[in-house]
Image (cartoon, rainbow, N blue to C red; front, top):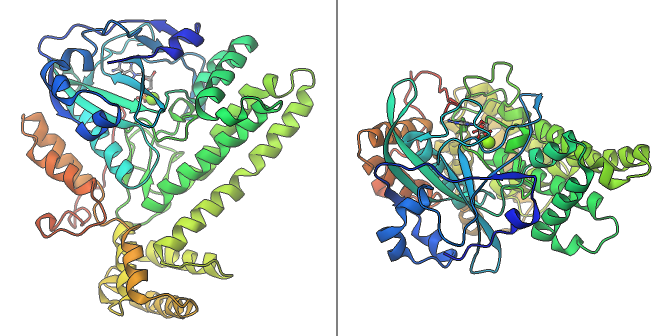
Amino acid sequence: MQFQNSYASALEGCYVPWQGAEVPAPEILRLNEALAEELSLDVALLHAQGAPMLCGAHTPADSRPLAMAYAGHQFGNFSPQLGDGRALLLGELMDRDGQLRDLHLKGSGATPFSRGGDGKAALGPVLREYLIGEAMHALGVPTTRALAAVATGEQVARDTLLPGAVLARIASSHIRVGTFQFLAARQDTDGLRRLADYTVARHFADLADSSDRYLGFLKRVIERQALLVAHWMRLGFVHGVMNTDNTTISGETIDYGPCAFLDAYDERTVFSSIDHGGRYAYGNQPAVAQWNLARLAEALLPLIDAEDIDAAVERATEALKAFPGVYQAYWLDAMRSKLGLHSARDGDLALINELLVCMGEAGADFTLTFRRAADIVRQQPDGFTALFKEQAAVLAWVDRYQERLAKEPVDMQARATGMDRVNPLYIPRNHKVEEALEQAHTGDLTAFDRLLAAVTNPYEERADLSGYELGAPPGAAQYRTFCGT
Ligand code: AMP
Ligand code: MG
């Protein structure tokens, strides 16, 4: 591997040099060969010899592994020092498009940031992140990617003893809102400027020469986060732990701990067992993203205007105020495509909201409702309306929708096919994910592989995947997820 170590070179003070723990029997369980090829890695060599490196037990000669420091607001409470408590950045690799991508290991052993944790990861959560991250990628959502899941041959102690594993993941960087907060909390303005300049050079290079680059940088991050959350909302995705240390500057989804997808549509849905107040509920995600961006803006104030803090506050506030409008525009765009609307017309927002109200009242499945909306276009609406317990309201909505469709001269077949390309049939259904992970803990990855195959090709209906499109069976207990991974 040809590592660059630009983070290590440029950002001393933002990390601790560190090594992964030794493990008894490293073994690659799954390697993402397509991604390895994107990174110009030798797939055969990785299979043959890569396991010790991909779990952190062996450090390649040109890597300067490190644990990143960051702070963060967790459920609204600020911790000035969190950091990689069970992860390591091995360095950056240049991909085939000339972009630097981080290779980062999760579960590679305790670090100075472990705060009493064991620094390890269990196989289940590693495979969960692999599966859901790759699903998100296939669904067109910016995300960290899984390069490999590596078994360590060790048992890790959770509620019971579980097989240990490491996730090797790829991201366009692991710089977070919390990385900026870490330096801001120490009032290290020089460090902050170095971090901002590094981040601008890496993610927003066209801003590097701008005299107003720090405000420009904030605006770009606002833009990317608005787009990201619009993607989550269009798919019924609940991240579950939108702390500022899990909010990337790149606008990629990171840390698939307690996340899950909606079955029945309900804005208030929370899956995480520790989110008692519903702070990170599905419908709160846009507002939380804006709150997290305000924390980034605060950290950047000394860079935006070092002499006049009031002026800095005013300019940053102005930038933040744009978020709801930017988000709404992305969301509306996405929802129009889900309904096959090719132009923007007055009344579209109301039409979409009316559908959401019907879905909420009927407890209709989020994913299937949109997937089957194409059947209305195909003049066979029964599969769609069958998703609603109470028919009268939805039948009235179908009439309004058909009137709206009639205003656009779009070929029926082309419209329906276009809708099938943005409305997935296969998402990582919660009960399917659990089934796959439970089986994996017994050493059998058959269900995992099948589900991965389904969700990484989410739009195309396949006969051999019958049942994979369905939500939890009737009577299933409410789904709960856990952070303790
Ligand atoms: P997360 O909720 O996974 O984003 O993690 C929040 C913080 O807890 C980060 O600083 C992690 O590195 C740390 N952490 C999570 N699990 C462990 C663990 N098993 N050992 C040490 N640190 C951990
Ligand atoms: Mg995290």
